[in-house]
Length: 94
Image (cartoon, rainbow, N blue to C red):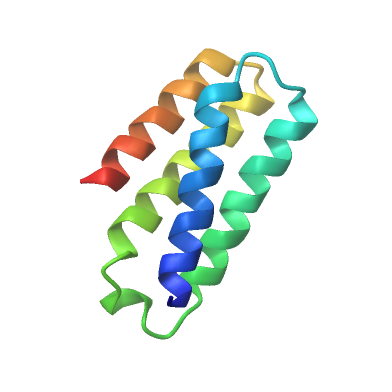
């Protein structure tokens, strides 16, 4: 399994967790999950072959969604946070 596939799987599983737990989890748990997603994105995007990876578009979609979700979490807008996560998951699935 390649680095991009591993990063994608880590990001995707983190976003699935977040999609199901935005209402009932502590803020620290949600921040940790978003941080893990963003760390995986940074690792993937730093790769030399990222521009040619078939995982480039899904990783970029998940990273953008995680960044937006993080902003909403910091504002206390968990409903909007969940919407961003679901949008990112749908975009990554295409």
